[in-house]
Length: 291
Image (cartoon, rainbow, N blue to C red; front, side):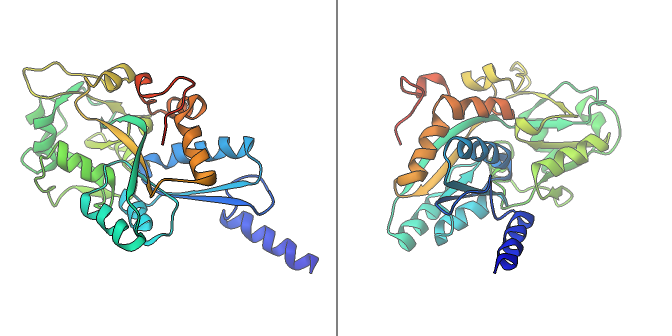
């Protein structure tokens, strides 16, 4: 029996079933969804479990749509999403689980537009980005740069970042068929970092080894960098909230975890990972927000 127990433990470690240090079976929280948020969710889980022995938090990505689908079918406690849930999705949660969806903003992001670090461009307008991703602009020279053909990378359609970019940059027009869809933001960054003709988009926390362009609403507006101050103030034109969603009010350990995420410790982790904490005016005295 001891041999079987050791084999089971080894299998759990190898497959990542245990999300943290070995601990007795106890409270388990499942979090699923946004690839944009997964690095932050994993860090939150790691730090929370250090100070809460007996709690296991399992964090997986797959895209905002995947997390929302899991919330609808009841297979996750918390869905992470880099876009707001749609009303029809909330209705499905209510129909299936009999509970209203609760939305909790947990961090801020400046959705960045990436180019290769050798690209001479420093800024881009939303109209120029739209023209690239709808296929109307195909040459760097048309953007005042150089390099010939533009190779545009994006996200798959179950991604919240894909949906946000389509709504706020493309104004709900379709992406061009030539856009290369990548399975996660890390894959977009990797592609752009290796390709001098590339452009991509994604969360600011991933913007390493590439250049994040300043963004302006139009030619007459100033180009704004996706810095913390500009995102917190709302000056950066494609700033967005990152969300937790639950079916009904969270209770028990899930409620305690969300309160911790919204508190001082959890919000510091946002910045440490590369995202931005919620505006301090949204937090109650003591660093916590009611949920």
